[in-house]
Amino acid sequence: MAKENKLLTGILVGALVGAAVSLLDKQTRQDVIASSQKVSSKMKEYIEQPSTFTKEVKQKIDDVKDTVHEVSEDLAFLNDKVNELKETTPQVVKMIQETRDRFQSKRQ
Image (cartoon, rainbow, N blue to C red):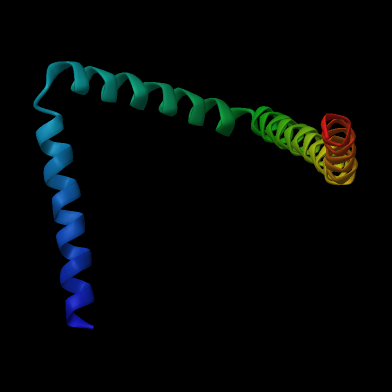
């Protein structure tokens, strides 16, 4: 159990040191500040108007549902095509064999 605590502690310390080192770069600091300001203003907006948050969450859920539905339809289409291919492949192979046999018998 102590090893797991050391591992977790090491990971956390490493992450903190990495974050601190990355903040030495001016552009990174500016990006972090800008992102923090965006998040802060969004949070204030959501606190003042919770219905906005609700609408956005519902919209994202609807978008995900639509995407899942489209992917499901695409997978069903592909499954149908694979099944068709499985059915037609033996027929094509048989037709090619018959054609080959016919041409071979004419050569002899």
